[in-house]
Amino acid sequence: MPENAQDSHKRLLVISNTTCTGAELFDEIHRHARETDTEVLVVAPALISRLHWWMSDGDAGSVEAQERLTVSLERLRAAGIPARGAFGDADPLQAIDDAMRVFHPDEIIIATHPRGHSNWLERDVVTHARQRFHVPILHVEVDSATNTAHVVTSEPDIK
Image (cartoon, rainbow, N blue to C red):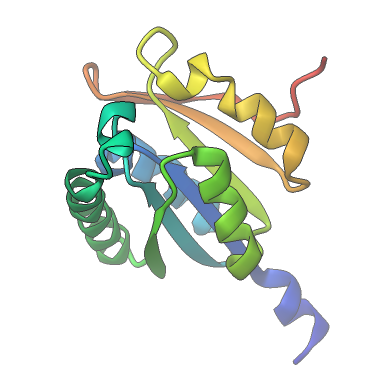
């Protein structure tokens, strides 16, 4: 394979909870995927409450994750973006770690709800991901209530 052909192939990992079906996130994915031959993996963590986890009742979280993933993949494919999906661990850092072992992304997009409405931000997931994983991480905040999204940070957090 010619060297420049390898350079044009990119792998983009998208980790998203309920934001993965929002049009706002698709716009951001499209901006990153249109520049090169980009393969996209969308990981939808099975969102379950601690009570359901302790009671070993994660089926509802899995069903909801499957529905979100199906909608997300249909929209990406309709836009001409090659994408596949996977369920992820309820812990977003573990979900990223699992995906990194098999997908080897060049970049990660973490989509969250806005501060004050995001459990992931309360747990400082984006900062922990940047400390743990050595690929560029883009944080996109998706506000489904106002149908908007914006890049919060694309550079590593400075501690």
